[in-house]
Length: 481
Length: 120
Image (cartoon, rainbow over all chains, first blue to last red):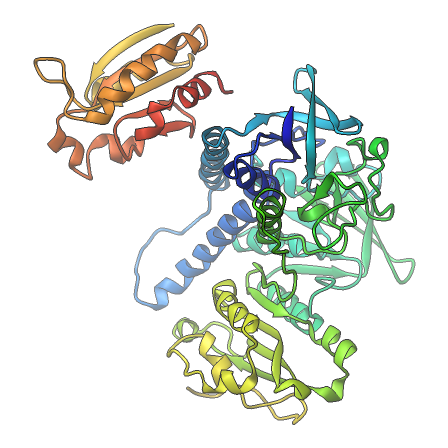
């Protein structure tokens, strides 16, 4: 019936289907949200729009505004009222915005004549899927080509009480009541970002970490992110894992140390589990048509054209094995795939030097390699690492942390000191990193960086005047302007 | 379903309140002159398209046809419709109390109008 059926209406799925429709193809998109154990569900748009990037950044902003209010008095603003935060007002405003995005996607698909089904899609035979809607009604559809873009959902702990009493990020952004005293389990960027803004809104937050913070990220930067959160009131319990969640007066969590017999017990209003996400590939009938998945993590291995082992089935987004789980990556992959399939293009998605930012209270932006990876790949003696602490000008007047913000670049000595790793810890890290990501794509070298004149006064300019190397052992503590 | 015709913001709010509990759809257009022509040409185009799709609304719905005012009133960036309902243009067709709306040329498309009336 169709040229293309896309299973999943998130960042990747929508980008791919709209591009294919623009190229004149007959396209169908299926999107269905299996409700959380708490019953939470959401509209068209996928994780980013509904329970990811968008509400996360808005809540992060809410927390930053709280901090700004505190700073404002030092800048001369005078007001009597004690400033408090109302969770319900924030959630309503954010959900309203998300609702307008859901609607916007509906209109956009309709305008491009993409057929949209709010149904759960499963393969029942080659080239054919079964679609089941909320009411249980079933329809069948066939297509020449399929794209899997089903994304992921939060993983639970597998301990007694986890699904009954705990929530995940799927529930947090539309929680109708303020979470109150919260335990965040996990040390992923989801865990730290959520813990960060909850604390910024004035809540009592504890983070329970099994081993390291931000696995996969530069660990020096990860520890600095955590340290900043700790000095700003977030409690960390390291090397413990929860073993049980039970309901007493509040929610009681029992945890065990990973290094000994020690037990920890505490009560919280809310427990947020953020220990990872699992690909939604296990119950969509992939076995029926022979699409291979990585049994360990459920992800889909693809070639560099996003094609699975079954030639008419492609996959994009978070479900890809070994690729970055980021919205812009999924969108880019989706668009380029449609162009290769129907637009005569041969451009493949470039997964190298993709910039990212972790929106913890102190933001961390990076592009390129983590220091550990660079050392592994190039060898320590072939690298020069430049670094510097910096104090944002806006932080001086209110007396906020100095010698906390940090900038680091990793250069490859035998390649003209090419910048192969860029890391910045400070306000607006995302905005700063975006520009440098383009420079790195152009082959940025230390020399070019030094020749670039800084914009003053900004945080970004620190990268144009970095002199001190790690190898020199010199002190980078800041004193004046 | 039933239709209510109102003019101006206070009348709109009052009618909206009286229909509380039922799905409310509203079409906002520029005023009409003595010959029944609106100063807003897009509204003239959109109105028949919308009216043709009204039968797709859920049974208990209320359709509020609202004339916002003259051109000068509409152009004022602080008029009540812009301020309180966040309207950005006329014609606007919306489902009251939700973020679902169609603005200007979107109202010319029967399919989009139908989607707004039948969507949940």
